[in-house]
Image (cartoon, rainbow, N blue to C red; front, side, top):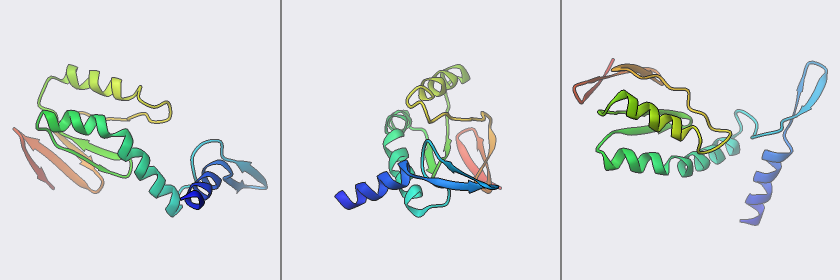
Length: 122
């Protein structure tokens, strides 16, 4: 465990990259495309989303996530949804949801449509 913690710390705190002829140190997060960074992001998001998943489950709504893309259904008012999403955006200073609201939305490579509570894809 200590070795894993040390490796994760190195990847997240000592990440440098070259751009042009300069070397930069990344101030937050890990390198894009790194397997360990992806795993750490999934662990972080799994913890971050617990309250949101609980809310969606409690009300019988659908919630799905793939890495940092989230899809969820909502059958209450748009005002209540915006209030929830505004609240969610205060949970962590580095996590901000960029969201779209509608009956038919793209999620990953699929168009998802909610027609009176029945989800379909195209």
